[in-house]
Amino acid sequence: MFKTFPKTHITIAAAATVVVTTAALMSPSADVEAKRMSIALDLESGTATTVVTTLSTVPASLVPGAKTEAPQASSTPTDVNSNLTATVAPSTIRTNEAKEVLLPSLGKPAINWQSFDVRSGDTLSTLFKRAGFNDGIMLSVIHGAGEAKKLQRLYAGETIRFATNSEGILTGVELQRSKLERLSITLGTDGFTGKKVVREPEVRTAFAKGTIDGSLYLAARAAGMGDRLTMEMSGIFGWDIDFVYDVRKGDRFEVIYEELYLDGEKFGSGRILSANFVNRGEDNIAMLYTDAQGDTDYYSPTGRSMRKAFLRVPLNARVSSSFNLQRRHPVLDVVRPHEGTDYAAPPGTPIKAVGNGRIKFAGWKGGYGRTVVLAHGDNITTLYAHMSRLGKGIKNGGRVKQGETIGYVGSSGMVTGPHLHYEFRVNGAPRNSRTVKLPDAKPIPKTELTRFKQVTQQQLAQFNTLRGNEKQPLTLASGK
Image (cartoon, rainbow, N blue to C red; front, side, top):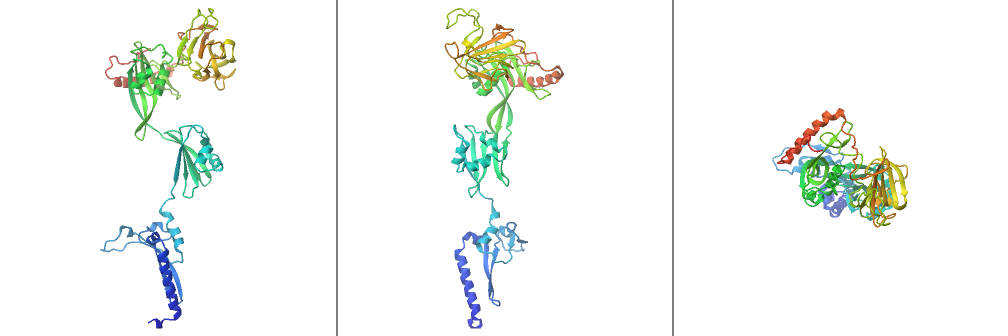
């Protein structure tokens, strides 16, 4: 039979057989599953053409230029993947080239993440090097668009993550600042771009109450309140109550506040919405209210601001020496008026300005040591002495706001130990800062009283419902 074919044709057929056998042995199994390769022989012209076709297991939508054919009706069971088939026109594409055309669209490139906790002493440069990137790449990131430059502000306790593709190229950086906020920097066609991403927590209302037996903090903790919430409560009532000396055993508190949830899990607390602190049998009620201008503050049910023009004390600490105009000086051993109040506290404890004012003096003042004197309205001045150092930006002629840190407790000047000496003067005359009547802040404007009372009535109704079996319900006339 072979004698009927020319020798050249037989030679071509033998060569084609070798090619097919070699391709079957050398090609990986994944390629065989993805496509079928055959050799078309033209015995008349003496040429051989490689034809690549995809199998029915590859969806036609993933094959560039493929024609989709409707399935033929048949009573024979078929594979579900064969509902769509792809027909590829004959070509001379080599096996590896066909792989590059058909396979990349089957999935996205894998992204690898490296995560590092930011520790004290870490810098952005050391963190990039720890992830395997040099300072040049770091500079290209922080010089990117948007908020990318904010990556330079790192704080211990945060988490930083680096994303790389399969080729090891940095494609993104994420700085997790808190459970709610992160800085996301991604690589695009124009370089790196950063943006702040903030998640909104779910807010739920919670109620806590307790009775003081030992300390406020122990009672609040037993009621399920954290230290931050306890500090906020003491700050709300701090203008009327000295929590170091005025609180008595048997005093009670009731608080409605916000609890914050993320993905169904509680992670913190929000604002206090309303609170009642019963001190020596008297109700002190505070309610959160936002006025027409968008300003939010705490008020009594009658519209009186809980905030005073002055804080009662510049720091919460033990009184080591009270206001006494007949006191014997502990160093000089002579009777010399003590025209202020001394608060014993560890060195470095922050000292707050008790009210808005202008800095009349900031520096060394004889036996007072490092001292700050503030001038307020109505001819009122306050003095803070024996500081270890002054606060940032505190200098003569400057202005401060209530609660701003103006210095830190120390033992400069003529003293026997670290403490703050605090004076309150009216028209130059000394007054006992713990008993002097402090002026109130501005009350609710008359134009908003109607709306304020409507909101307050709703808050009081909620309060009385949550209080349960308390004997006396709270009303607009309750408390101070």
